[in-house]
Length: 248
Length: 208
Image (tube, rainbow over all chains, first blue to last red):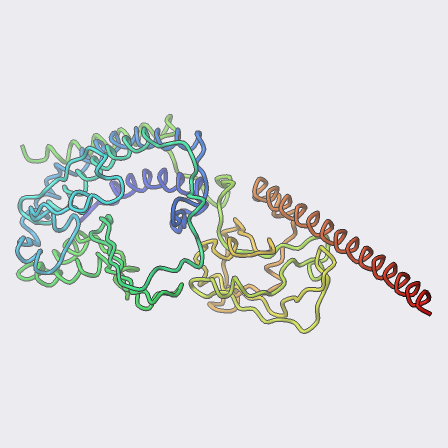
């Protein structure tokens, strides 16, 4: 896409701020290992919450900058509009989820559909696309970042005092009753699902992950039909895959 | 007008360029090998083994219980037990590892081994500068490379190390109290047995 090094580096600068927060709280930048059954691994300090708030406050300003940099860029618009169009019917049939699905105009966000966790307490909107092309997918992600900032501001304001982990929760040797269960969340890439069959022992009888990237990637061929080879690169980029998820 | 969007972007780039001369928010680059960002206290990378005292072989806390080996999600730990035992900090005879290998090319730094270790032996290091010319051998850390002193642990994670030390002091106190109770019980039992024996002796003497 030519000369996209600059916005990439600016985005990395913001990413470092977020990863620094992760590192100072949980110890690792990526492999946080922070969630537990019934809570978290360690408590947050008041200082950390203040840092997180300042990062969240500064983020919309960065988004404005980022959009000024490329949202109206004629080169980017010429390259990405009407490229890699995905029809909503095909997207639903293929089981695509997340920003790729919403860019086609299908209103499907698990945070609203399932209302899992405490998402029903937060005020936010689900941005939807119109054309389902590469530019729409880019725009959806920018708009979702703005919505995420709203969610984070509400969450940080409401963070309660008290135990950070339920003392009654059993962390190890957890024995679920025999049966099957499917849990799903709205991950950045789409619907992340976990299917479990338990036979009553601490280890699952069967365990299957529904990775959003792998399923989103399956429609790459349909989107690339009739396009040039140079477009294939930006279409692949607009699906935004993580290879760790695809490789299974 | 065509080109307006590009100009807008250029203005943004220029703002960042001029800003980088006087604003720390804009200039975030660190000249890495010469300059380093100080490590955060919680930062963790790969596990290491703690030893007490000066000699790593006698002071190694690991008793090769192999819990970490079983719990490790990517299975990067390999342990072989030694036949010879050695005393631990309580004076009990405990097993020790003959081989303790961690393949840091596989390790993902999840800290599960630290959480399950009942002997406060395995802890996380914050050294991230590992490099080797060999793909397999140089990243397979053996027991002698993994062993690091408690002093080192205090220098990298002071609060966590303090907590660990307190746990160990508590353990020692509990152990001593237990030993004392055991000794008292033994002495009492001995006393009782002696008095009983004396009583029965007296009784038999009476009967006669």
